[in-house]
Length: 226
Picture (spheres, rainbow, N blue to C red):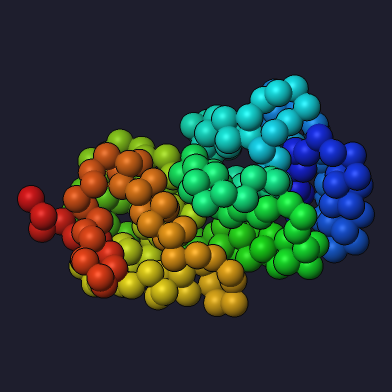
């Protein structure tokens, strides 16, 4: 698998390249945020490791947003690597489209585990499966979602989250259960992460009510609110 490393600290790039290649990944790197769209389009990476602050003064969050808005690149998983450790920064990164977030300094062992987990979650699911709920259609063969016949562009985590909801319509799931089913066991992800991805999914679907919040319990895909 191919990983694009977007990082402006040479020592970190060297460390990442050494450890990733040791695990069998092919590595491409750039220190400039302005190169990412062109590189990702040409190289088609399976995952992007993205620093927050880059050499050309481009904000990694803006790069993440641009990737998620690009119809050809929006499904590529993104893990942000940054020295910014405030909760608000983490929520901002996840809200913009990142699938995971690690603060520097980080454990390379933990990063490798998270890379494997994110790639596993992004792998094709039940390729021949088609799902329908209300005016939503999910075509697993094409990895596409349609609402009333119009395409909806989702990041990989939102795609998996919607896939899980559509396989269990109207059933209420708590955050812990969603973390286990969508993110996987033994992965350190905070409960707040679920809320951020639910907000992103609602925004992408253009309907905040189709995913119902059940106070102190969790969430459900439900078309009965109206």
